[in-house]
Length: 569
Image (cartoon, rainbow, N blue to C red; front, side, top):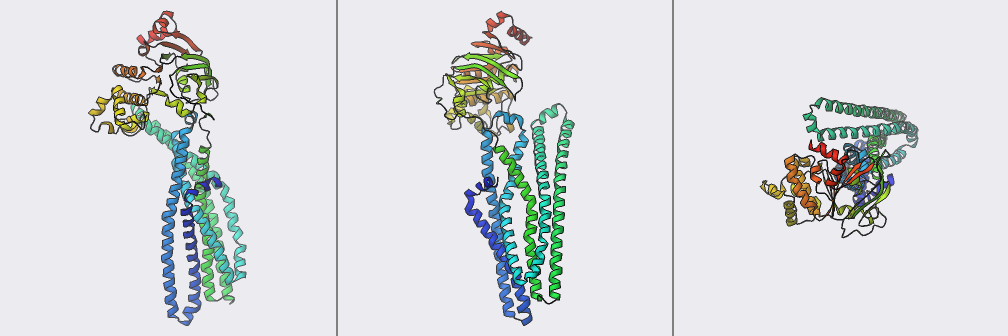
């Protein structure tokens, strides 16, 4: 794990070593001060050497100015180093998220994922910056003060060191408990974030059903779990600090008593006594620094573990040697496909069907029959367990996901628009598109005139998830970006079922224009939208129950006939 963390320092090793050099020079400055104080007490004051006093004062002033510069460098550039590393980690984890399968997002809350990307990485940054500094400075101060203490009086130094194991024992005894407590608190923080994200996203539903009190209870319950977890972690941390500081105070008391006794016995002079007490503080200072560092270490290393856990999630499966997938006509063959979610009952069992290139095929039937599942399998949002799906005779598992999805356009019932402008959302279909291409796609989707009626036109900000637009306007923008993408295969997943009848009729003409000269796979609850389909498949949990044209299926008097009767009611 530490080896992995070190790789993030590599691009900034120059800045990293400069930061350590500043830490080294800062430690040297601190070590010089007690020695100068010792000389002032032993030589300058007894001999009334004003000239030496002035020299020492000037030297100390220079040291303090240098210390200020080193501290500035460490605080500014050290934190910048951490920010650079945090940005790299965030880039890595966000890129990894783009490659994770849909199953991962089905099983993990958005707020928890956000907590890993934001909160965890912030703590990793603090550890990445302060960790090496604290360890390096502590090591320098510890070794330097020990050498100087020995130069003053070896027996006295040995006495002090006999008590040092007590401090180390106190640190090690609490370290493991802190790790467990901080990991639990980290998990609960993610859960609270998930509750908040979910409640904010559904605030309109909450208001419409007057369930504010219920949402508040959910939040309070999650927040109470967070408080309990944090309280446990701070209890352990309090025990740690109390025991550590008590051990350090005992060490200081022993040092003061021993040095005082040595001075009383005239085994050291007054200057050595003063210098010794100052160096004892410097000797203890790295221990104190490491005590304070422990909380930061536990926060940072816990966050890094969670970061690595996320990176270890398996990506979507790509073929080792993807085949070329160009000039696609859109012939789709589903051969004996079986699929289930998380090893539950099969949603699709031994399903086979053929959609010739350029044909319009509709899927209807009761909920749970696998219509949307089939549409998710074709672009490989999920991977089927048995069988194969071919496009133009090529197994989709032998094609790169980018090439496969580049040739498929999807219009869904629940339109997702990104926070931003109309232009940015249409450009999702083809990020490098020209202005003329954007306008042409918008005209074909019959949304251009509305856009031009807005004050800022295509640069109009549409709010979070397009909240400032109506359902029909959002649907037209989603159609425009598919026009811009211009794929040979179109999947319409109940694209108009969330719209009113008037808006649906207006959108239908846009969808018919979109589907012209392409292979169309259409899921529809409103059967009026698929009357002209080349073939209609009635899909149930038993597979394809009926197939044929609208007229043929009505003549059968079966499931489709019954669905058609319900629709007319």
